[in-house]
Image: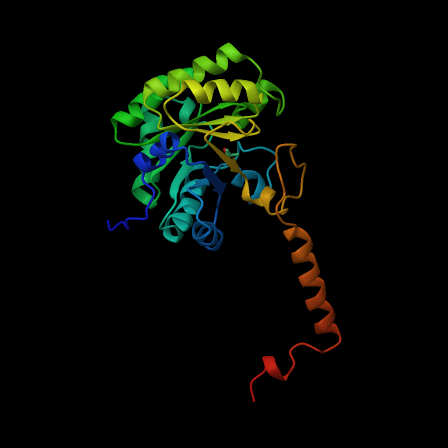
Length: 266
Ligand code: KIV
């Protein structure tokens, strides 16, 4: 496989922490978006299981299947030549045994051009993380709010158990995770975790003192239809841009001003 020098590998991604280089990550689920995001210079692209909600229209991340994740990861993998591309292990792949997790993650790396997987879990997933890493599969852990556990937790709530979060983070690092997502935890706890880990922390709703940040691209672009969490900063309002463009097109078709001679063949 040919790889350019600008390609962000797992070791380069990890080294950003000691270099003090803040890591930006966004989600992508299709070829065009992934290519545009990659050209922006962000360091990481996540093929997140949030596709269940923002692409497929489900209420939670639970319904998306491994085959569907792979289908989208193939598109993203084809588009990206610089960023590190990480793919979510969907529910409940990482909770149904080590063999299943290794088989699923192996399929992701074999069938897409992506370089790593993310799994929701910390201390409870140590054996699985370790088995994946032993199999040559780079793993990003994900602690704090774990959307795949929403039915157990009873909602999308800030996670405040400092001791549990510290144990999760340190056990995941010890098991071999190369990075860790901290979702919806108080900023002070995220800072303490970040300062005591050697691997980069990527925050989402975890304050500014993580080593990097990740957001769902649809939220960043103002393309979300449902509730937008407090931690999201919308950098654009593409919902309005799309609605305005569609309405302008509709009007021009109705009054026959489109297509004009510039957009027709003689
Ligand atoms: O699936 C996803 O998009 C995620 C991010 C929100 C971190 O896990």
